[in-house]
Amino acid sequence: MVKSVHVVEEVEIPEGVKISIEGMKVVVEGPKGKIEKDFSHTRNVAISLSDGKVVVESYFARREQKALVGTIAAHIRNMITGVQKGYRYKLKIISSHFPISLEQKGDVILVKNFLGEKSPRKARIMPGVKVKIEKEDVIVEGLDIEAVGQTAANLEQATKVKEYDRRVFMDGIYIYEKGEAK
Image (tube, rainbow, N blue to C red; front, side, top):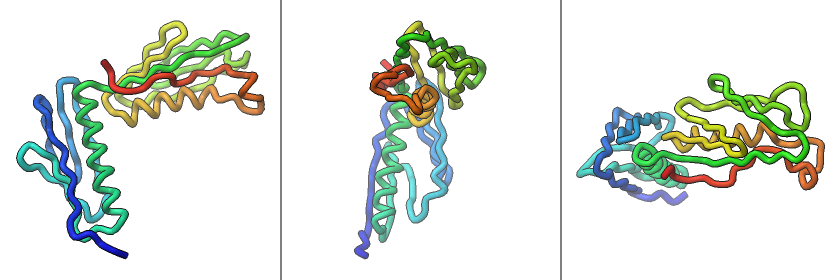
């Protein structure tokens, strides 16, 4: 069990982005909006602001704390990118025989007529995420990369084919592009 004396990760704060830290809660504000994330579940890790940088550090860190320092820094970088540019996932609707139709109702997307099923399948939309349905494409956009990715995954999982050979029954909704919104 070798401990590192001091593990530090610094994240630059770009122009136009404001970050405030209250204990272990990080709030990032930018031109597109605001994201909050609570890191209070972490132990032996400190988050602070100094000289236009966010400093994530840990003293006498074991392997878990070292990994946690890098993970928290990566989360903060993703939050900064989210409030500056946002994130976008594009999904394609694939259907061979039964035409799939999507309908958005509140925070749920209903997948109708999937493989000829009578009852619609449901995919949850995470808070803070916008979904656009355009003919054969579904565009999922938002500031928080985790919420956008989870919404896209919920759509993909809702149309997962079970008990059939997926090489033959390729119907479903599939992610084909993901990244920063342009």
